[in-house]
Image 1 (cartoon, helix red, strand yellow):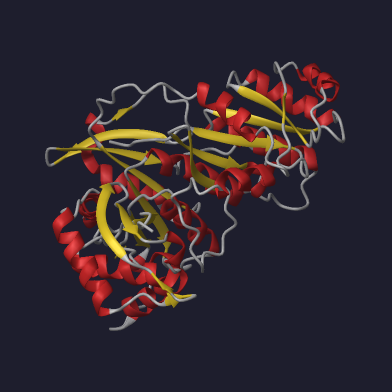
Image 2 (cartoon, helix red, strand yellow):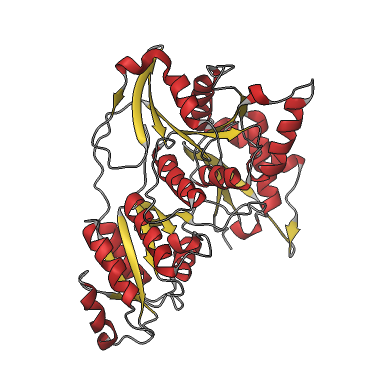
Length: 439
């Protein structure tokens, strides 16, 4: 089931222009993902498209490790993450500064990885081949000169990268892929063991996955599931000891491959900034999810305890008010059996298609009931709406002028759709396209 876009990762020393490149590519209206207000995260991933091929871009520079780390250790850790998660790696260097000793170290590491690496030399302001010449010394093949600042050469880099994308093979695996993510010690392992229960006998650990997550295929009530478990991952201590940083990035890889994500939260500790970061990635990737509040047996309870917890979740997850939650104890087994059926449910919501006729009636009514605000004397007109994709549901609205769709009005339309159809647990996307009016 899982459909995964190829991943391009950007690696290199600080200040060589990685983020500028990232923002230029992500910021060209090619990303369907909207950056919602109220999401406090720095974006480190973006869904992009080039020449009709969708891909995910990771800016490893956007991932701060503990500030006491020496620079080389940081770059090494980021390079390692890139190698683990990416299909293609863009290795950034700086033409103005020239080669730096740590550039050679990173190049050696990347070469050994056997992953496709494109050496990108940034800040080449006027094209001069001699500037690029010394970068052949990295032994990564022909360097590509770009100026991220002036958007020069970006297309050339993406053209090369797309060539390395895996060619689509037919997927025969029909199991529902469930990623179990969350902070260390939130009880991911206990939950996985509970879900697999006595079924361990027929469990096959899928061999040959080079990934960090462990994939386990099992059957329950005639349905097939694959649990992508990030809990059993041993950190590579040699490179980096920042647990949080690693668990977030590892989670990202599992989320990309999954159909549904379960975010396991330690209820005793409550939802933390890091939990919000991980679930934010799930939201950005357009995957349905269930917030699993674990260790519920340890909480002192009265009649209003669950309400208070829900209130706190609503507060922290403003950017995804569609969230679905369940309160369990993996240890005692309380409500643990609900987790699989909720995963099925949110996946079904993400796969649901609203009939075009019904959608148009719904939205045209909504526009009549509450007119869009006018802007400089112009008002948004809605001509036609269609749901063009599922997982996540994507709605395209044909309007007179796409610049007139204000964020708050988009939220209004999203709420109208959600009130009419149950999309709980899944993000939905709205895109507008202008239809040129005849003058």
